[in-house]
Amino acid sequence: MCIIDRFEGDTALWEGGHASRSLLPMAAREGDVLHEDDKGGYYVDLVETKRRKDAMQTRLSALFSKQ
Image (cartoon, rainbow, N blue to C red; front, side, top):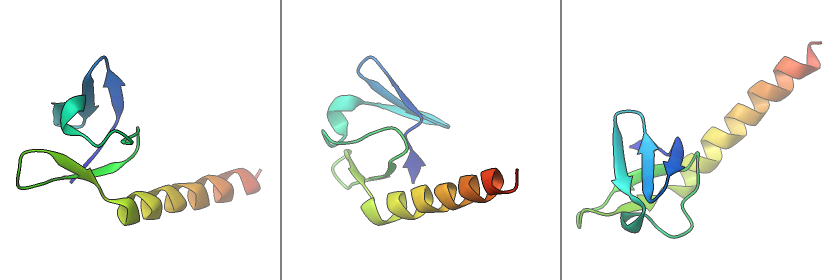
């Protein structure tokens, strides 16, 4: 599992790795959770991506509501 940190040109970067954007689904975005498939490409784990984004939103809401 890896999480896209950013894109630099045609390369997707994440902690400890990178891949050509051509190996990713066209809709892949920063913050998406990726898994490598058996053909050397990647697919977006939509369920895990949503879970992580929801958890981060909950943390941010809690942080800013304490002010």
